[in-house]
Image 1 (cartoon, rainbow, N blue to C red):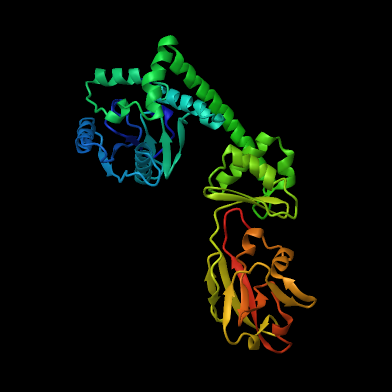
Image 2 (image 1 turned 135 degrees about the vertical axis):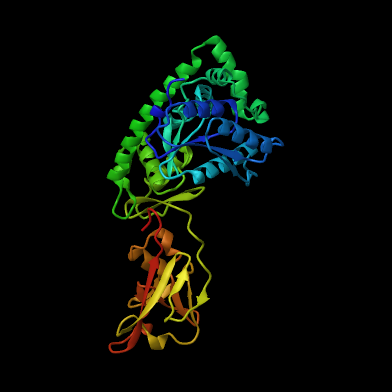
Length: 431
């Protein structure tokens, strides 16, 4: 195999995700026998899923010791959560453990090879993936405090097996790799061998295609990021008018970049289309929304906002003005003033704070006004309106925090009053 260390990002050390299988054994041996440019160690994840798990961990310690490489065994709880399959649970637990074990700047290397890359590309093709999926597994990407690198993507499984045989190194076999399910193993054992038999250059060709698509996807990502930055408003939304002027695919890509920048899940193709149609292109006075697991899209004052799920409005509760009140959506405070805010004399008896009630009104100079209209006129974002604190005395609304006070409850000149304020909690991409 060609020298591997030169293909890795400059880091403060190299770790090998060492399962004890043939691929990771070839990787560990190749790195251990090259000139040491950086410290090297092996990380073995003990899933506890197979009866042989303890024996595999001991095997990995022995092989690493023979190669002069320190080996750390990471024990994980790989039991499925929710609807996870056993394979998904094992992968989640494995990567969480490896990520947590990385030192700052360290490069975690894995034994993924050309056959794995071909399987990934085929799976993504069958799922109708876009450029990002069809690019397969990236050779290098950030991971936790360091990097994840796959230096063997141009080597075939057969070449790696020849390498460990020539080195006289034993390896372990995971029985799950031979199972006809899931889909990846079906492609591995049933489809790829027939393709390779028909076209011996299949793995190399698919690897080249993946690299070309990755290059195109990177250019597309750079353009999407430039679009996102150009569209972003000072309040953290995306300017709707400019977003809708973009070609549909570019608008969707900018939307996805915005979601990623806010740490939110990316909407699928159907929801992306709905966001651009139902939310971005909605009437200016509408309050549309599209929700997907872990996020939602809303519109406010000509901008599109991508937000995390928000808490439910809390029930009404007693309150004393001198005490700050922490609510799920923010904090309510009251400062003593003179001749401003709610008259202290009006806040006697049973004082409560709660969210607006549909159709609720507050007395005003021109008659009783709908609280929903007061919130809209004050420019409060739609997602905060159902949370905005209404102060009630004896069950009657006397103030809308920081926005309006009923004239009969307002402090007169020279009279002690309370200035009420509500500060919504900061959310990524919200106002």
